[in-house]
Image (cartoon, rainbow over all chains, first blue to last red; front, side):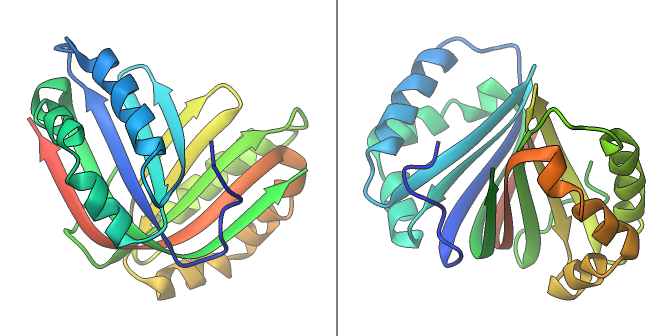
Length: 106
Length: 106
């Protein structure tokens, strides 16, 4: 899910943890469109995702704040976010600077 | 899962994303012990967790780096981590400074 090997420090994570509502009309289609779009944005490094019924954690990784801000201005992304208060019962969105990263792989 | 309402900025997230191995002897017991211990640490703010079969994302939230470093020095935690390369096929551990946080709740 990473386009590159995670850098050891100095990049950004956007953590989006959520509980979905039961009003999900249009959600799946928009999710697919925005995932495709995000992955083609300049500075997109990768993502990690986990869903457990209605609860989910989605983390996208970015080169810098400029890349995050650029993605924030994308019109499709803005349209998707305008539905957020309908699609979700609760969400927490966090913009984080990754100070240290350690990868272990067998 | 948060002990407090998430602050709007200026705290830390430790993102632990992993793929488990099939050598999980002792994992469940240690997981329960360390979860209990972590929640009683000074500066522990809360956690979010999602598991999807063998893949999981666990995020713990902390007041500052001092709290994270103090938890790192806990002997039970050190013992738990000594098993990590057996319990996991892959893991990525990231220490992040949360610059901005936004909570929506219905």
